[in-house]
Image (cartoon, rainbow, N blue to C red):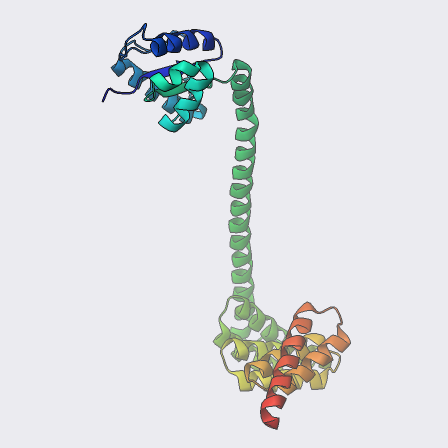
Length: 299
């Protein structure tokens, strides 16, 4: 069986292709491997047909990577099933005579569209550059800020530690040193300093409540939940209106799976701070836990 003939059809040469198809259908021309040229591109043999098709197809795929002047014209490949329809439209008689024609339809885009696509490259590149610069600047800012905070904490710890070593530290100094050590995640040293602050405290009880809350937070961070609950309870005893202390107490009781007690603590938090999103979320969760526990107990 002979190889299919490749036909390149463009809007400017439909009439010429139709005439050639009529010649084939009437027997005036023999089948051959000749490529019918529509626009003067490519060679005139079967090998040239394959080369021209490859250039057309791959030029279409990689058009965004080439300048507009170098991009090859795109082509659409019709299968043998669709070839009969195209051949019938060009010449009804030729559709029956040449059933094995593979037609390459020239779908070249106007030059104006290529110029437009090339003009869009600059805004896209600018947007990409702006996003990249934003990410780089944001990352650099975060790194610099973290370094400054670390330096500030180191300086504060050095100054307060010197006061403690020389015996000139007050209860506030011990408390502040403990808070600095907690921010550095040195919880064991922080507990030591805050406990010392509580022992020698001579200030206001509201501030002492904050010291107990800080001590409870340090214990909780060390997974010493019972000690944390004790310190949080002491904090809210000293300062009943301390919303943060109630919220932290609820968190510690929840960790101990004491759902009802945790719910009561979250209720106190919301009574003092109705907009506390964390307490609202945990309150709903504890209500579900309490209801399930009651259902299991009643069975």
